[in-house]
Image (cartoon, rainbow, N blue to C red; front, side, top):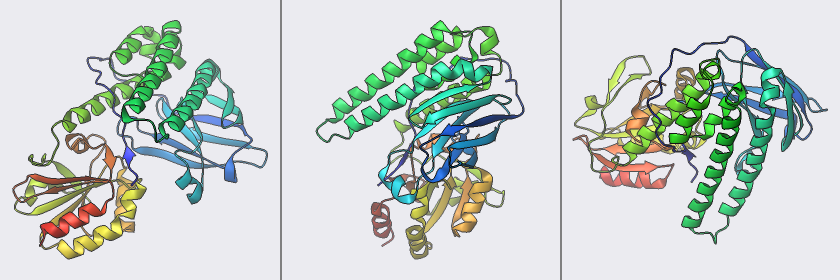
Length: 376
Protein backbone atom coordinates (compact mmCIF):
# COMPACT_ATOMS: atom_id res chain seq x y z
CA UNK A 1 0.00 0.00 0.00
CA UNK A 2 1.39 3.37 -1.00
CA UNK A 3 0.62 6.62 0.76
CA UNK A 4 1.26 10.25 0.05
CA UNK A 5 2.99 11.46 3.21
CA UNK A 6 3.24 15.03 4.48
CA UNK A 7 6.48 15.58 6.49
CA UNK A 8 6.21 17.03 9.99
CA UNK A 9 8.31 19.89 11.32
CA UNK A 10 8.16 22.00 14.45
CA UNK A 11 6.12 25.12 15.10
CA UNK A 12 7.59 28.54 14.42
CA UNK A 13 5.57 31.51 15.63
CA UNK A 14 5.80 35.13 16.58
CA UNK A 15 7.18 36.47 13.30
CA UNK A 16 5.34 39.39 11.74
CA UNK A 17 6.11 41.88 8.98
CA UNK A 18 4.39 44.12 6.42
CA UNK A 19 2.37 42.72 3.52
CA UNK A 20 4.64 41.05 0.93
CA UNK A 21 5.71 42.89 -2.16
CA UNK A 22 4.82 41.21 -5.46
CA UNK A 23 6.77 40.88 -8.69
CA UNK A 24 5.06 40.20 -12.00
CA UNK A 25 6.51 38.13 -14.80
CA UNK A 26 8.05 34.72 -15.20
CA UNK A 27 11.30 32.83 -14.86
CA UNK A 28 12.99 32.08 -18.17
CA UNK A 29 14.62 28.68 -17.69
CA UNK A 30 16.72 27.05 -20.38
CA UNK A 31 19.63 24.70 -20.67
CA UNK A 32 21.09 21.50 -22.03
CA UNK A 33 20.68 18.23 -20.11
CA UNK A 34 22.16 15.29 -21.97
CA UNK A 35 20.63 12.30 -20.15
CA UNK A 36 16.88 13.00 -20.06
CA UNK A 37 14.75 9.90 -20.61
CA UNK A 38 11.97 10.08 -23.21
CA UNK A 39 13.06 13.61 -24.21
CA UNK A 40 10.67 15.14 -21.68
CA UNK A 41 10.90 17.10 -18.45
CA UNK A 42 8.05 18.29 -16.22
CA UNK A 43 7.81 21.62 -14.39
CA UNK A 44 5.83 21.79 -11.13
CA UNK A 45 4.99 24.74 -8.90
CA UNK A 46 3.13 23.99 -5.66
CA UNK A 47 1.66 26.38 -3.14
CA UNK A 48 4.13 25.99 -0.27
CA UNK A 49 1.44 26.16 2.43
CA UNK A 50 -1.45 24.08 1.08
CA UNK A 51 0.81 21.94 -1.18
CA UNK A 52 -1.73 22.53 -3.96
CA UNK A 53 -0.30 22.23 -7.46
CA UNK A 54 -0.75 25.68 -8.98
CA UNK A 55 1.21 25.15 -12.21
CA UNK A 56 2.62 22.29 -14.20
CA UNK A 57 3.89 21.98 -17.74
CA UNK A 58 5.55 19.49 -20.05
CA UNK A 59 8.96 20.59 -21.32
CA UNK A 60 10.07 19.03 -24.63
CA UNK A 61 13.80 18.29 -24.75
CA UNK A 62 15.51 18.38 -28.14
CA UNK A 63 17.76 15.49 -29.31
CA UNK A 64 20.84 17.49 -28.27
CA UNK A 65 19.40 17.98 -24.76
CA UNK A 66 18.39 21.62 -25.10
CA UNK A 67 15.14 22.99 -23.71
CA UNK A 68 13.51 26.29 -22.78
CA UNK A 69 10.44 27.31 -20.79
CA UNK A 70 8.94 30.42 -19.22
CA UNK A 71 7.53 29.53 -15.79
CA UNK A 72 4.90 32.09 -14.71
CA UNK A 73 4.80 33.54 -11.19
CA UNK A 74 3.51 36.63 -9.41
CA UNK A 75 5.89 36.37 -6.44
CA UNK A 76 8.94 34.40 -5.38
CA UNK A 77 8.24 30.71 -4.73
CA UNK A 78 9.87 27.43 -5.83
CA UNK A 79 9.79 25.34 -9.00
CA UNK A 80 10.74 21.68 -9.39
CA UNK A 81 11.93 20.27 -12.72
CA UNK A 82 11.49 16.51 -12.90
CA UNK A 83 12.30 13.82 -15.41
CA UNK A 84 9.13 12.29 -16.90
CA UNK A 85 8.98 8.52 -16.46
CA UNK A 86 6.71 5.90 -17.96
CA UNK A 87 4.41 3.77 -15.77
CA UNK A 88 6.91 0.91 -15.39
CA UNK A 89 9.71 3.30 -14.39
CA UNK A 90 7.48 5.10 -11.86
CA UNK A 91 6.60 1.79 -10.21
CA UNK A 92 10.29 0.92 -9.81
CA UNK A 93 11.54 4.37 -8.75
CA UNK A 94 11.20 6.04 -5.36
CA UNK A 95 11.24 9.47 -7.00
CA UNK A 96 12.15 10.66 -10.47
CA UNK A 97 15.43 12.53 -10.88
CA UNK A 98 14.83 16.24 -10.42
CA UNK A 99 16.22 19.59 -9.40
CA UNK A 100 14.62 22.58 -7.72
CA UNK A 101 15.14 26.31 -8.03
CA UNK A 102 13.75 29.41 -6.37
CA UNK A 103 11.20 30.76 -8.86
CA UNK A 104 12.06 34.44 -9.15
CA UNK A 105 9.92 36.38 -11.67
CA UNK A 106 11.83 38.48 -14.15
CA UNK A 107 15.06 36.49 -13.86
CA UNK A 108 16.81 34.02 -16.17
CA UNK A 109 18.47 30.70 -15.29
CA UNK A 110 20.36 28.14 -17.35
CA UNK A 111 21.51 24.63 -16.44
CA UNK A 112 24.08 22.43 -18.20
CA UNK A 113 25.17 18.81 -17.71
CA UNK A 114 23.38 15.67 -16.56
CA UNK A 115 20.51 15.48 -14.07
CA UNK A 116 22.91 14.22 -11.41
CA UNK A 117 25.59 16.82 -12.14
CA UNK A 118 24.34 20.22 -13.28
CA UNK A 119 25.96 23.63 -13.36
CA UNK A 120 23.83 26.75 -12.97
CA UNK A 121 24.34 30.15 -14.57
CA UNK A 122 22.03 33.02 -15.43
CA UNK A 123 21.10 36.49 -14.26
CA UNK A 124 22.62 38.00 -11.13
CA UNK A 125 20.27 36.20 -8.73
CA UNK A 126 21.03 32.77 -10.15
CA UNK A 127 24.75 33.45 -10.32
CA UNK A 128 24.48 34.13 -6.57
CA UNK A 129 22.39 31.00 -6.09
CA UNK A 130 24.87 28.75 -7.95
CA UNK A 131 26.89 27.72 -4.83
CA UNK A 132 23.66 26.77 -3.07
CA UNK A 133 22.56 24.83 -6.14
CA UNK A 134 25.80 22.83 -5.93
CA UNK A 135 25.15 22.27 -2.21
CA UNK A 136 21.65 21.00 -3.01
CA UNK A 137 23.02 18.50 -5.51
CA UNK A 138 25.41 17.20 -2.85
CA UNK A 139 22.48 16.84 -0.44
CA UNK A 140 20.45 14.98 -3.08
CA UNK A 141 23.33 12.51 -3.44
CA UNK A 142 23.50 12.11 0.36
CA UNK A 143 19.74 11.55 0.47
CA UNK A 144 19.99 8.79 -2.14
CA UNK A 145 22.67 7.12 -0.02
CA UNK A 146 20.42 7.43 3.02
CA UNK A 147 17.50 5.81 1.19
CA UNK A 148 19.78 2.93 0.22
CA UNK A 149 20.73 2.40 3.87
CA UNK A 150 17.12 2.63 5.04
CA UNK A 151 16.08 -0.07 2.58
CA UNK A 152 18.39 -2.56 4.34
CA UNK A 153 16.00 -4.97 6.14
CA UNK A 154 18.59 -5.64 8.87
CA UNK A 155 18.40 -2.03 10.12
CA UNK A 156 16.08 -1.53 13.09
CA UNK A 157 13.48 1.22 13.37
CA UNK A 158 15.62 2.95 15.99
CA UNK A 159 18.67 2.87 13.72
CA UNK A 160 16.61 4.26 10.85
CA UNK A 161 15.36 7.12 13.01
CA UNK A 162 18.94 7.86 14.10
CA UNK A 163 20.16 7.96 10.49
CA UNK A 164 17.31 10.22 9.45
CA UNK A 165 17.87 12.60 12.34
CA UNK A 166 21.61 12.77 11.62
CA UNK A 167 20.90 13.60 7.97
CA UNK A 168 18.43 16.32 8.98
CA UNK A 169 20.85 17.88 11.45
CA UNK A 170 23.66 17.90 8.86
CA UNK A 171 21.37 19.64 6.37
CA UNK A 172 20.26 22.23 8.94
CA UNK A 173 23.82 22.89 10.09
CA UNK A 174 24.98 23.42 6.51
CA UNK A 175 22.12 25.82 5.76
CA UNK A 176 22.67 27.86 8.92
CA UNK A 177 26.39 28.11 8.25
CA UNK A 178 25.76 29.56 4.79
CA UNK A 179 23.12 32.00 6.06
CA UNK A 180 25.41 33.24 8.85
CA UNK A 181 28.14 33.90 6.27
CA UNK A 182 25.84 35.53 3.69
CA UNK A 183 22.91 37.27 5.45
CA UNK A 184 22.91 39.96 2.76
CA UNK A 185 22.32 37.57 -0.17
CA UNK A 186 18.80 37.09 -1.47
CA UNK A 187 19.69 33.59 -2.62
CA UNK A 188 20.41 32.53 0.98
CA UNK A 189 16.71 32.91 1.83
CA UNK A 190 15.99 29.77 -0.22
CA UNK A 191 17.75 27.71 2.48
CA UNK A 192 15.04 28.37 5.07
CA UNK A 193 12.95 25.63 3.42
CA UNK A 194 14.99 22.98 5.29
CA UNK A 195 14.72 24.73 8.67
CA UNK A 196 12.20 24.57 11.49
CA UNK A 197 11.65 25.76 15.04
CA UNK A 198 14.48 27.76 16.54
CA UNK A 199 16.71 27.40 13.48
CA UNK A 200 14.06 28.93 11.23
CA UNK A 201 13.39 31.82 13.60
CA UNK A 202 17.13 32.47 14.00
CA UNK A 203 17.79 32.38 10.26
CA UNK A 204 15.05 34.89 9.43
CA UNK A 205 16.37 37.30 12.04
CA UNK A 206 19.90 36.99 10.64
CA UNK A 207 18.98 38.40 7.23
CA UNK A 208 19.60 42.07 6.60
CA UNK A 209 16.43 44.23 6.51
CA UNK A 210 16.82 44.67 2.76
CA UNK A 211 16.84 40.92 2.17
CA UNK A 212 14.27 40.02 4.83
CA UNK A 213 11.72 42.60 3.67
CA UNK A 214 12.49 42.51 -0.06
CA UNK A 215 11.16 40.34 -2.84
CA UNK A 216 12.18 37.12 -1.07
CA UNK A 217 9.78 37.81 1.80
CA UNK A 218 6.91 35.69 0.34
CA UNK A 219 9.25 32.69 0.26
CA UNK A 220 10.23 32.71 3.93
CA UNK A 221 6.71 33.68 4.99
CA UNK A 222 5.36 30.61 3.19
CA UNK A 223 7.85 28.39 5.02
CA UNK A 224 6.76 29.90 8.35
CA UNK A 225 3.08 29.33 7.50
CA UNK A 226 3.79 25.76 6.41
CA UNK A 227 5.60 25.07 9.69
CA UNK A 228 2.69 26.48 11.67
CA UNK A 229 0.21 24.33 9.75
CA UNK A 230 2.27 21.16 10.15
CA UNK A 231 2.74 21.82 13.83
CA UNK A 232 -1.03 22.25 14.23
CA UNK A 233 -1.53 18.96 12.39
CA UNK A 234 0.96 17.24 14.70
CA UNK A 235 -0.83 18.65 17.76
CA UNK A 236 -4.19 17.42 16.42
CA UNK A 237 -2.73 13.96 15.79
CA UNK A 238 -2.21 13.51 19.54
CA UNK A 239 -5.97 13.60 20.15
CA UNK A 240 -7.38 12.43 16.80
CA UNK A 241 -8.41 8.82 17.42
CA UNK A 242 -11.34 6.47 17.33
CA UNK A 243 -13.90 7.14 20.06
CA UNK A 244 -13.79 10.95 20.04
CA UNK A 245 -16.39 13.33 18.55
CA UNK A 246 -15.66 14.05 14.90
CA UNK A 247 -14.62 17.70 14.41
CA UNK A 248 -17.49 19.53 12.76
CA UNK A 249 -16.89 21.64 9.67
CA UNK A 250 -18.68 23.60 6.96
CA UNK A 251 -17.32 23.49 3.41
CA UNK A 252 -18.61 24.38 -0.05
CA UNK A 253 -20.16 21.54 -2.03
CA UNK A 254 -19.87 20.96 -5.78
CA UNK A 255 -22.65 23.50 -6.41
CA UNK A 256 -21.13 26.19 -4.21
CA UNK A 257 -23.55 25.67 -1.32
CA UNK A 258 -22.51 25.34 2.31
CA UNK A 259 -22.39 21.79 3.61
CA UNK A 260 -22.10 21.14 7.37
CA UNK A 261 -20.99 17.75 8.64
CA UNK A 262 -23.40 18.15 11.56
CA UNK A 263 -26.31 18.13 9.07
CA UNK A 264 -25.81 14.35 8.77
CA UNK A 265 -26.19 13.68 12.51
CA UNK A 266 -28.35 10.59 13.02
CA UNK A 267 -26.67 8.67 10.16
CA UNK A 268 -23.46 6.78 9.68
CA UNK A 269 -21.00 8.89 7.68
CA UNK A 270 -17.86 8.04 5.70
CA UNK A 271 -15.47 10.92 5.12
CA UNK A 272 -13.13 10.15 2.23
CA UNK A 273 -10.18 12.57 2.23
CA UNK A 274 -8.67 12.55 -1.25
CA UNK A 275 -7.27 14.71 -4.07
CA UNK A 276 -7.38 14.69 -7.86
CA UNK A 277 -3.57 14.43 -7.75
CA UNK A 278 -3.64 11.23 -5.62
CA UNK A 279 -3.29 8.12 -7.79
CA UNK A 280 -4.22 5.71 -5.00
CA UNK A 281 -7.33 7.73 -4.23
CA UNK A 282 -8.44 7.46 -7.86
CA UNK A 283 -7.68 3.73 -7.99
CA UNK A 284 -10.00 3.19 -5.04
CA UNK A 285 -13.06 4.77 -6.63
CA UNK A 286 -14.45 1.61 -8.32
CA UNK A 287 -14.58 -0.23 -4.99
CA UNK A 288 -15.90 2.90 -3.28
CA UNK A 289 -18.75 3.06 -5.79
CA UNK A 290 -19.67 -0.57 -5.12
CA UNK A 291 -19.69 0.08 -1.37
CA UNK A 292 -21.76 3.22 -1.85
CA UNK A 293 -24.34 1.39 -3.96
CA UNK A 294 -24.54 -1.39 -1.36
CA UNK A 295 -24.79 0.77 1.77
CA UNK A 296 -26.21 4.13 0.65
CA UNK A 297 -29.46 3.53 2.56
CA UNK A 298 -27.56 3.32 5.85
CA UNK A 299 -24.38 5.35 5.25
CA UNK A 300 -23.70 8.81 3.81
CA UNK A 301 -20.46 9.14 1.86
CA UNK A 302 -18.73 12.54 1.73
CA UNK A 303 -15.66 13.14 -0.43
CA UNK A 304 -13.42 15.89 1.00
CA UNK A 305 -10.92 17.13 -1.60
CA UNK A 306 -7.62 18.37 -0.13
CA UNK A 307 -4.47 19.99 -1.56
CA UNK A 308 -6.37 20.62 -4.79
CA UNK A 309 -7.59 23.44 -6.97
CA UNK A 310 -11.31 23.97 -7.36
CA UNK A 311 -11.08 23.48 -11.12
CA UNK A 312 -9.19 20.18 -10.89
CA UNK A 313 -11.47 18.96 -8.09
CA UNK A 314 -14.65 19.60 -10.08
CA UNK A 315 -13.14 18.04 -13.20
CA UNK A 316 -12.16 14.89 -11.26
CA UNK A 317 -15.61 14.55 -9.69
CA UNK A 318 -17.17 14.75 -13.16
CA UNK A 319 -14.61 12.48 -14.84
CA UNK A 320 -14.92 9.71 -12.26
CA UNK A 321 -18.67 10.21 -11.84
CA UNK A 322 -18.56 10.30 -8.07
CA UNK A 323 -22.17 9.86 -6.89
CA UNK A 324 -21.80 10.88 -3.23
CA UNK A 325 -21.61 14.31 -1.63
CA UNK A 326 -18.42 16.16 -2.58
CA UNK A 327 -16.95 19.16 -0.75
CA UNK A 328 -13.80 21.23 -1.15
CA UNK A 329 -11.20 21.97 1.53
CA UNK A 330 -9.66 25.15 0.13
CA UNK A 331 -6.28 26.72 0.86
CA UNK A 332 -7.78 28.70 3.74
CA UNK A 333 -9.90 25.87 5.19
CA UNK A 334 -8.44 23.77 7.99
CA UNK A 335 -10.40 20.51 7.96
CA UNK A 336 -7.24 18.62 6.98
CA UNK A 337 -5.52 20.05 10.06
CA UNK A 338 -8.44 19.27 12.40
CA UNK A 339 -8.40 15.65 11.24
CA UNK A 340 -4.56 15.49 11.46
CA UNK A 341 -4.21 14.21 7.91
CA UNK A 342 -0.75 12.93 7.05
CA UNK A 343 -1.57 10.61 4.15
CA UNK A 344 -4.10 10.19 1.36
CA UNK A 345 -6.53 8.63 1.01
CA UNK A 346 -7.76 8.59 4.60
CA UNK A 347 -11.24 7.36 5.44
CA UNK A 348 -13.03 8.28 8.66
CA UNK A 349 -16.22 6.46 9.69
CA UNK A 350 -18.55 8.38 12.03
CA UNK A 351 -21.52 6.94 13.90
CA UNK A 352 -25.01 8.53 14.14
CA UNK A 353 -24.03 10.32 17.38
CA UNK A 354 -21.07 11.97 15.65
CA UNK A 355 -18.40 9.75 17.21
CA UNK A 356 -15.44 8.49 15.15
CA UNK A 357 -15.60 4.68 15.05
CA UNK A 358 -12.88 3.93 12.48
CA UNK A 359 -9.91 5.65 10.84
CA UNK A 360 -8.29 3.88 7.90
CA UNK A 361 -5.21 5.37 6.24
CA UNK A 362 -4.45 4.32 2.67
CA UNK A 363 -6.49 2.28 0.21
CA UNK A 364 -7.21 -0.94 2.11
CA UNK A 365 -9.73 -3.84 1.97
CA UNK A 366 -10.08 -3.33 5.73
CA UNK A 367 -12.39 -0.38 5.08
CA UNK A 368 -14.85 -2.41 3.03
CA UNK A 369 -14.82 -5.32 5.48
CA UNK A 370 -15.52 -2.92 8.35
CA UNK A 371 -18.36 -1.25 6.44
CA UNK A 372 -19.98 -4.59 5.62
CA UNK A 373 -19.89 -5.58 9.31
CA UNK A 374 -21.23 -2.19 10.36
CA UNK A 375 -24.21 -2.40 8.03
CA UNK A 376 -25.32 -5.97 8.79
